[in-house]
Image (cartoon, rainbow, N blue to C red):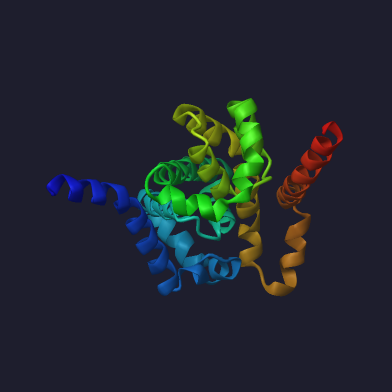
Length: 237
């Protein structure tokens, strides 16, 4: 009987923890804090607190990001922008890439537990769309879907687990593949720091700063990449 109980808890503990975390997030109104308006409202406090408690701020930020990715919460892009705003482009990118990879690992492992059946139903047809690519060349395909946001981040995590992609390939391709996109969003966060400090009537001026123009250009490129990918894929098909 004790073995059965141990097996039961081992099998269903991941889903219990993730579901409780997800419910707590929405019950406490967590989604209200994952917005640019919330960042602007709490800008002064966040900047001051980060300056005084830098390492604690990094720890809190990374844990928050890991939880957001693990629970597939909305607002990861806002968190990435916040990372760039608080820590700058380079360190912000580094902290986000580490956190996003760690969160992706948690979801990957959860998808291989009893939680997998629920996640598989949730992702459904999208996994089927990726199956051929993963079977053909797992490393190349995973790098492609990480570099180019063709599918939602959480769907790729689940698909890789469901399709039995090697753990080492999954981790390395995730870490390397998300660096360019993360850097662009971190650059946006670093660039809007000045805009958040200005009066609403003056914020247009910040758009002409080279750093902000480069960040906006990067976002435009990221949004066009899936279209270009599907176009080229259609021509080859």
